[in-house]
Amino acid sequence: MAIDRKKIIEEMSKVSAESNEEGIIEGFNVMVNRLPAAFWNSFAERLSTKASPEMLEATEYLLVNAAQECGYHTGYGIITSEEWKRIVVPMIEKAPEDILYGAYAVFTAWGWANAEVIELVPGEKMVVRAYNYYESDVAKYGKSKKMSAYMIRGVSAAFMALAYAGEYSSSNEGDRISAFKCEQVKGIECGDDYGEFIVTKS
Amino acid sequence: MSRVLKPEFIIENYFDAKNKRHFLNGEQTVLHCHHYAALYSQLALDADETKLLSDVAEETFYRTIIDYFKKHQICRLEDRIDIVSEYYSVLGLGQLIVNFAGEDSGEVELPVSHIDAGWRRKWGNYDKPVNYITGGFICAIFSAIFDKPTHYYKAIETQSIVMGNKVSIFKVIH
Image: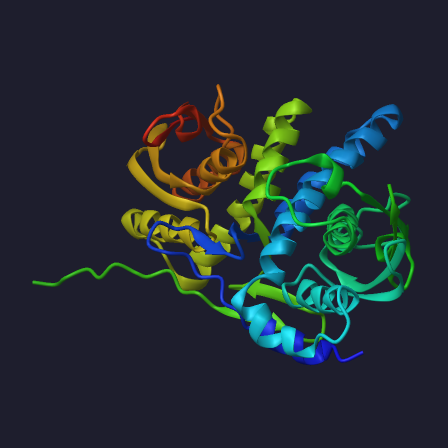
């Protein structure tokens, strides 16, 4: 594999997110915001914790879905950006697998999670491990019984869809975006040493 | 005759290379897109949890703004208002103008709004306001600039870009 993860993280973490004179950050085909991680965590955690056992699955689905759409469109923006072409494209030997490895390096560089692909069965299955991620900050002491990395789940499913579910579609045609699903099987917030995520076909 | 200079919002970006996390003025931030913000807003509407979204925004931004005021000794009301308006833009949320502010009431205008523009880009106009995140931000800035606790103010969006208006207007009341 020619993907130099360390180099991508080093370069892509320097990409600036500066707003224009209207206070808008345009980049990667989307409008970007840089809100505190605590804001996203707090809303997701309060919403999911207050959900009744009957409503929890539906609530978590909506939280994952938000990240899945975000990951699909922003992910496409990333892999078609000038920065990607300059830094990552020269390292790609085998597509789309190397694109996925590279995308997780960018995922890490952006501060979403220090995550990488540890197993990939092309078009079928992907296992992602996250060694440090802001969504685990919901537990400051002890172990939570609820896994909370909704954003990583959604974005991972989206990245797999970008790689293996056909050509990108800018409209919200559900089929492609939701061609894959992601389950979290380990979580730092639950006392594990890392978070682990398994992506499979929906 | 002395001249009072407007303070500029100081941006200190830091990437923690060990833990792979980004910080703005000591606060951990993450880059997300308009899809994510729009879908969280829609989720809050669907789940009837718009107040939760607003409360979370207020509590988060209040801490950040208060810390900034303390660290940089921002005490004059005019300076505080300038700083929070700049902070709003630095976050990529758009343009925020405080038309007037008193301890019991105020009015805030948004000529540009990330949340509204993102919603419109994704789904077009909507028949009611959706900018609950900014509502919380505005409550936070009023509490911070007047040294009040959180949840002291309410921000009501009376005019909204997502509904087709040129600017969004928030009425602030205690």
